[in-house]
Image (cartoon, rainbow, N blue to C red; front, side, top):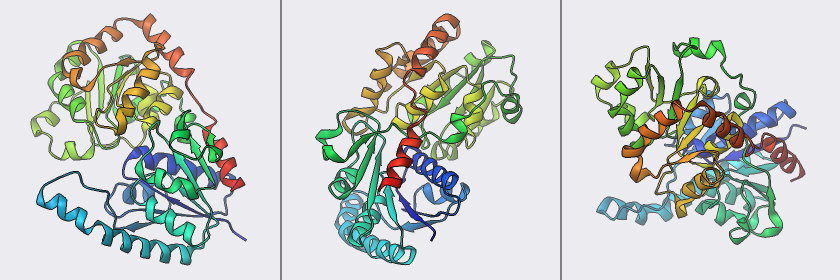
Length: 367
């Protein structure tokens, strides 16, 4: 009899990519398994999951609005009814699919999906990427059989007897990436003879990084450095056409990079936000990195993530408020200091947890 796995969560790449890594691991170990995703109907998982070859059902769901305009208040008034509708649909999906386990990775949709699964007698497992858990996983934790975490000290949020320290799952193509792969340079139209800087502000982009890059494109050209810049799709839609016209042999501007393994393969220096998944991948890649934490993350956890690396010399930390003034000078200092870059890469690799997906899969099978 085929095993059936339900996976739910999303909203950002920080939730979606771990979910896809888990799904691919399940398929690798159990090719006959049936896997179904449940996501939020208007979020990026509805596009990314089918692109990866997995079916997905969407729930109409959103979180509490912190917008105190009439529109935001009205959204909050409607939210209980939206949640009830999402629960009804989730129960229907689960009754039809009959999963053996429901796996939650955080994000709006995993709340009603895993709550419905628990009500219907399906065992649940959570995967928490961050040092400060989201509201959904904290709400679901008491009923979960296991909670796979990437940071120590989460007993203050979750039942201690359910926590297992596994690390964050890394996409297989990144675990197996080949540094300085000629095919990567060919794909992006870059030269392997020149240094390459990768700037990526997470799957949704980062305004501060985007505005800083937009002001300094000539510096990359003048230094004969190649820039691969992921803007995020929202920023890209509104980007000045003059900026896009500035692309040449030194500059590539993209809304979203699907083949991140190729981008990492080329990168000599990386500029990134400090989300948990980003840090897990950067540690495996082991390239000198400048981290600009998103300042509005819950409990400022991105800054804590970044400090864990910068305090050991594994990365450079620049606060978001100082990035426009300090990012480019720090970046150019690194370009001119290959010994420091080599040391940073070595220290960063000591944070890598390449076997996280194996540990998570073993707990999924136990549940």
